[in-house]
Amino acid sequence: MCGIIGVTGARDACARLVAGLELLEYRGYDSAGVAVCDRVSGDLFRARVAEHGGSVERLSGRVADAPEDPGAAIGHTRWATHGRPTEENAHPHLDCTGRIALVHNGIIENHRELAAGLDGRGHKRTSQTDSEVLVHLVEESAAAGASLTESVRRCLSVVRGDFAIAVVSAAEPEVIVAARRTSPLIVGVAASVGIVASDVAAALATTRELYALGEDEVATVRPGTVEVAALDGSRVSPRRVEVSWSVQRALKGGYPDFMSKEIHEQPQAVRDTLLGRVDASGRTEIEELAIPDEELASVERVQLLACGSSYHAALAARQAVERWARLPAEADVASEFRHRSAVVGPRTLAVAVSQSGETVDSLHAMREASRAGARVVALTNVVDSVMAREADGIMYTRAGPEIGVASTKSHLAQLALLDLLALHLGRVRGAISGEELAEAAGALLSLHEAVETAVGRGDAYRAVAERFAHVEDVYFLGRRSGLPVAYEGALKLKELAYVRAEAYPAGEMKHGPISLVEPGVLVVVVATRTTLWEKVMANVEEMRARGATVLAVADDGDEETERLVDAVLPVPHVAEACSAVVNVVPLQFLAYTVARARGNDVDRPRNLAKVVTVE
Ligand code: M6R
Image (cartoon, rainbow, N blue to C red):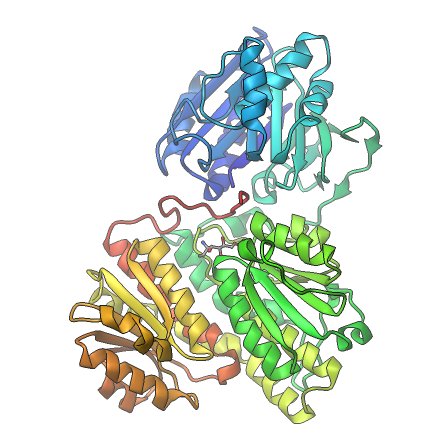
């Protein structure tokens, strides 16, 4: 998590840092800070603020005191891992001389050992972070006469863990040294400006000439130039980043918050994601997949890996792969996968699902699957993300930048694209008839219209949701296609409204959790018309008999369901196989409404960050 931005060669460097930090705030918002080299005095200016959700705004007032003739400048927005979210733990961190400043994203695993050595050599550390050791290590080499670039290289050679860093020194006031391992970082140039950023959105206002740093590469960024080298100092040609969207797509565009904007972009996200990849006859084509059909046809099992909402998409995909491709499929939480003795081999297709393409748990799980011999596909929303670069094949959702911490449009796009992958596998394996293929393709192609209808009912969903704004204890139930939707609905309510919500297979309640059901409990159930509808409604009866209030996601015009529950969230009927894409929409509005009614910041819920780059 954590956002990094650096600019050199611009008179308005501080304004650019603040604008970049505003765009990066979604990565973490516990505190923020900047460090700016003063080209006139030769000093280093630093300002830091720790205020949940308001740090960047307050920081923009503090940079009024920054040097008028700035040289290299770096900024950071933090999601606390080591050390509480206080000003002293905010980045940039300074060395003992106050002339070198460093920002870091990631975790330094051997920081205790390094800190003990530094303390023994007389360094004065002022924070509880793992990051601070880095700047003192750089200081030691710089004091011995090494350049900033060489000092960073030496520092990183003794570090274990994940990092993206940017470092400036008053001794070389126009230089930013940037480096990465696992955590992403890009560098770029424009005329006489150089830039460093942890993601493309923050750099776009300055330039579209951007380069992705590779593992263990160190960049020396000067006004208008970038040099990249490996840790041993050998020169490397940086790889250009393809930028397919404009900075406007990462702005709120008139909506009160990013979450509303992104919910409204869902029909387009679904349509764009499927565009050109499937036609009405069922011909499927996934251009970046880069794994030949013959090889896909020989796959014996599919292993899906993901976290959070992406994991819920993976759960839905498991059903789609079994249904259409007739292949055994498993979906694992990425952070667990690498620690169990999963049986994965050359005939396994591992699909790592991640909006950001950076989630470190998913990245490690993907690497683990690859080590075990699986062919690995990254299904991600971020072009050129770390996972996209490391995988054998790529599938991009085309949802555009997602800034709200809660996944919405990227989740729907994942569901649609995973359905398409399942169909594609079914087609190349000959596991699905032409008729079934055309039927499924037709359902996929019209999905965006159903999503549009559902999104267009936002006000009606909100009106229903307001009746439940006071809830404290909620179960989300579903069966088969409804279960991943229930999981996602519960996650949304938890993360945004801070309400205890648990998702369960509806038929499993009677094996234990039903003992918790009593008057005052809200049960949200996915009760659209599938072949399991009667069983779902029998489970609903069990809940109502114990006093629960029941809110159902139900098909339009389904009066019978309406009579059997306390309230409904109606959705347009679509084929069950792709129904998760539509059925999750009212649950997004439910979470949004309850969160807003409680005064919560839906874009920046407490304790969370959009991109989770720590284990
Ligand atoms: O970028 P990823 O899809 O890998 O992120 C995974 C989760 O961190 C993410 O889905 C998280 O659960 C969201 N906040 C859910 O809304």
